[in-house]
Length: 275
Image: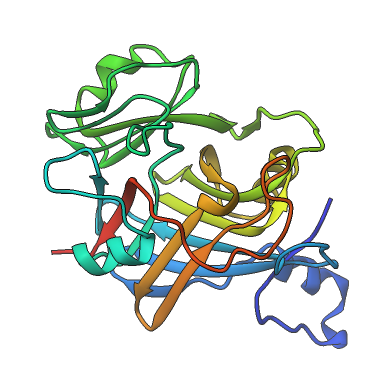
């Protein structure tokens, strides 16, 4: 298994192997706003493509708010993640999910309030809900297709999204080894109910990426794929961190690392500052 090191950490030789191993499992979190933290870790071995960095944004929904923006809503249009941040005053933005050929509809089910972006549930097995409609519900939930009453539970949230699953509840990697790999944008849920936005420009197979994520002390219990290749994006503009990240490599589509600009995204999930 690859080792991930906290970006910028430099243990001395005197600290020994045990300290180095500890650092490899300890991302250095930086507070950007109440309930919003950023960290970056890097793969501890040469990579053939990309920068080898995994970007992490952790959001506590009890302190900061997630919002969805859909180009299918009246008056909206596709924008890059950076443009979504600027136009909506967001601290961060990531893909909501893969989109269909109409350049507007999510591949899986997607709803915001009474506005339905895609009414059809497919066979994808990961569901995200946020914006509880009644008291007593957690601010954010991620459900597996095998969970009981998934659709009824999603109905309790203002935003509901279905996407391709990466990690099943109880931190189980559902992917098998394969040769296909791509830049990845993903969303995960940890054991404390916090949401993580994840971005890696370096292409991995999803089996390998899941192993990397589960090797870190992120307490991830579930995760979903929200986009791969050049469409994958993550923007962060908060607390002195200004990043507009975009992907490039995808097996069978764009097998290079030359894409340098974010693509317009029809739908995103953003983070707003606590009120």
